[in-house]
Length: 86
Image (tube, helix red, strand yellow):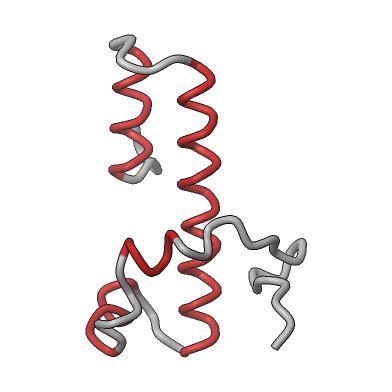
């Protein structure tokens, strides 16, 4: 399963072992993808090169809990930045 990160492998394993339905699989996959886009935007905005660096530099904000608050924000296609008016 080269090229798959740990969360995707775990998700596929749960699907194959019938712990989750196809619908739950799809919802989880969308959630993972949104999180990855959000982390990428956070890294781009701050100039960080990794999630570890974000957690080190911004320990209050680079957490699963904080990121989950922004998962449903729409993103500009191809831009990796959320559509938010300030």
